[in-house]
Amino acid sequence: MIVTEANRIANIKEYYFVKKLQQVRQMQSDGLDVINFGIGSPDLSPPNEVLKALTEASERNIDGYQPYTGRKELREAMVQWYRRTYGVSLQSDTDILPLMGSKEGIMHLSMAFLNEGDQVLIPNPAYPAYTSVSKIVGADIVYYELSDETNWYPDLEALAKQDLTKVKMMWVNYPHMPTGTPPKKEVFEKLVAFAKEKEILICHDNPYSLVLNKQQPLSIFSVDGAFDVAVELNSLSKSHNMAGWRVGMLAGHKSYIQSALKVKSNMDSGMYYGIQHAAIQALQTEETWHIQRNEIYTQRKKLVYKLLDILDCTYNQEQVGMFVWAKPKKQRDISQWLDQLLEQKHIFITPGKIFGSNGEDYIRLSLCVDKENIQKAIDRF
Ligand SMILES: Cc1ncc(COP(=O)(O)O)c(C=O)c1O
Image (cartoon, rainbow, N blue to C red):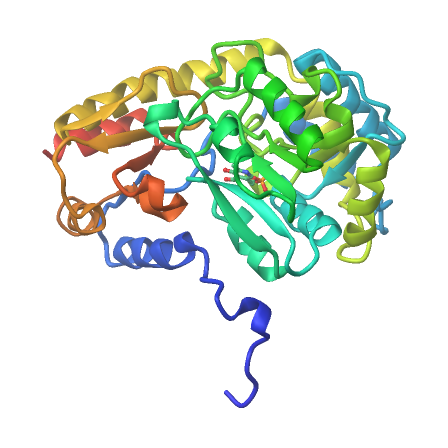
């Protein structure tokens, strides 16, 4: 190539799954029956009413550009969903911004708040996009350690002893991916106090709050004063089986929302009307639908535990969300072992190290595999 790429992406790796899933697809097209525990893309359908709403809306021939801030009725549906789900009050005109999936919000927030050389706190382990996007915007990453010893919660006292004068933003995510650690109000309270003292913007990423969560779903805004120092990303991808539809939202104080909107409105030109219309329907989904979805995941999880027992792994049964995080008892080169499992048993499992160095001794299995296939994986041993 005669043109070199920009410095800002020089040390960004292609997303792990892009390459690995190519290999899985190649194996499948070679006729191998690969069971894929890798990616968290729901295989179940959204509620029927949502599908109907999309069909209905598509017949209305509303094909023009849509508002950058989403339609008013969508913002209102989001605000009502926040009230019902989390007991949190937001203003539909100012405090909520519909997004095309929450992943794009990671970029908007980073572009809106991080200058080159600013520091950003990122959990280790974590969703890899926080790191990649921070690198793209030229921010300096400071990882904060999460580990088994602290039950995968941050040690804020230890963190407060570090020099944090250059830190502007902190990524937080509970229920935590990949470890399945549930949110705790007390942890959120400490985080908000910490952020106030250190003048840091907390970006709480909350896409898993409705999946296998045994407690009342929690928003960071359930903590008094959080509105001053925190924003929250949310998503219908996992909670409503709508990953491919790309519907998410950013909630927070209007000044933070306005900054994110400055970026977003220069990056896209709104979300298709039909998807907004169907998302409104999704946000009104009855509790019974969520219970049924969780029942399916619960049954799958039991089978995944069986598989993990065969693989001689330990795992915490209090985990929530759409994955199971597990630790092989035997010390081994995990990537090599998982490559062997893929080649010999045609089972694909994600190595924990892709989420950060603290994930090195772990593996992650997605629950987006039906019972028959999990059983098939078990039968291969
Ligand atoms: C922690 C976390 N945040 C954000 C996302 C992005 O979700 P979406 O862009 O589909 O809303 C994911 C997806 O896997 C995730 O695991």
